[in-house]
Image (cartoon, rainbow, N blue to C red; front, top):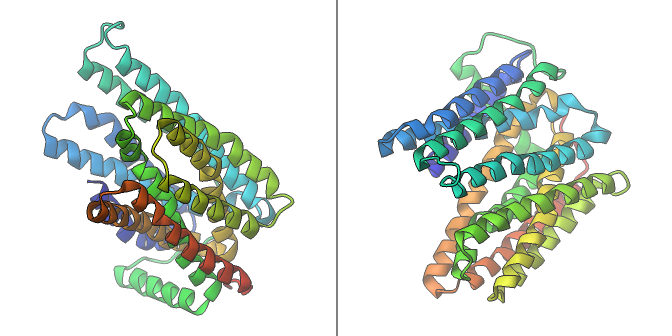
Length: 360
């Protein structure tokens, strides 16, 4: 279901992004996808047939991931280039800490359902409803305040025209090495980041961490991500974005190396904290760096392609770790193999940064 939703968004993202670049369309597309995600999330626990539940789950993931394409593209409209790093970092920081609130409340409802005299099915319905309401409430301020400043002039949109425009954009990217090299770099290093995040649960379980411990580890990572994303936001005022991204990539390479020898439970907690220190920063700064080097009036289309690199990478890295684990029987070695992803990502990012030409 996760893979299917990823493929759907990867296909639709650049196409709908190109349409959303038209005047007044960005907010409408963001709202539509967010609404699909919110409604699907709230309805999910009311379906008992597994295939219906999976279908609604896919819809919620498509709504969430699809809305993020347009949300990221809005960065070029809500701030100026000199403030993009700070705005992007604050977005991730407050997103991480804010998500902890419904998360903790939801876990509390499930863990203490007996004391609250709540049947499990009712507790789960409340959890999903609470999540959907939280999502809706904090989407409204953006919908009320966002104004699309950069856009292409509206025309009647025909399918052939959209695909033609997308093909033209891909040719533009091929001819502008800074964007092309960055997307290659992003694919590799974010691959490593997402794989470490996705495999953390299995890794912790293999070391004997209970389900409660895994939940706490996830919570710790998000709490740590909050101040460090703000810290990197402050650093971005005095340090170039590329230098900070390189620091984050190098830090993740060291985290992967640390994972090779990890065999004690306390070491897993150190890993969780280390991941949180750089997780928000590398996501936020990558987004703002990309926003600075693309044409702002085509941000929807370009961030659709950016999203393909991010979502595609998460599948590739997880597959790599799974294959190496199956062959060697050593999950630590599989995590260590991610160092290669960070090395390749660092190399291409360095090359991208040496290319000063920006897309016109």
